[in-house]
Length: 289
Image (cartoon, rainbow, N blue to C red; front, side):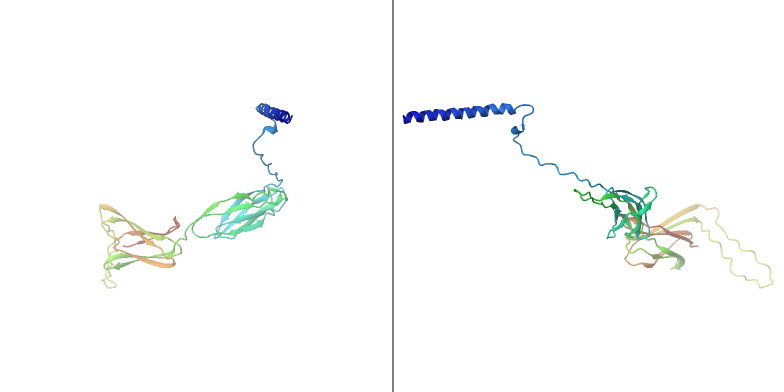
């Protein structure tokens, strides 16, 4: 009797296992349909998207700006749908940044949303950049927008030019010499340059020296001295000389001597070079005849 019951239990369990396996086998085809139910999804569950905040970005414009002597003046407007006044920040390469409210009357916008203020900036020769941003006025929701960039202009500061040019001619060892003296105003210059140029016709067109009168008063009148010019003029000589002097941190008066110059009118140009830029030219001229 026990053997019979054991056999019957084994048959029953075997039949049950067979039915379960058959049931599982029948479930997969149900998932292989164009739009399977969610129970067939074996992939990971994606997190829900973050909430969308109601905070809005500020708006505005940099309408005008000007660099004058180590400072930048900016003007424009800025507003925020959440309220105001909007805080406007200007950052230059001469920290710290400066922040001012946009609370001036702006005619075109018809509201107190204008700004106009001055920010210190670098006066060093070179190319500089500054950025103007409008800071957000939060409404308490998340995420809070970042600041809104209005503009990032660039400006160029030229090297400080030399000044106070003085030219004088002398003779050195029997040769014509020219002294070039000027004030060097650049403290960070890479070099300054002196250019000499002249145009001379030959033969020498220097007037003859009439000498001193030798006739006593009351005597016959002396002829009026007339300059003598070489004729015909066979050739024309164009002369150029250049001196490049590498600068030093000091400023002040500088004198350079140029010797063995021809008898001609000499044109002199002096410039400073700094940060890859050339200053305005200081120029003058003198005759070495």
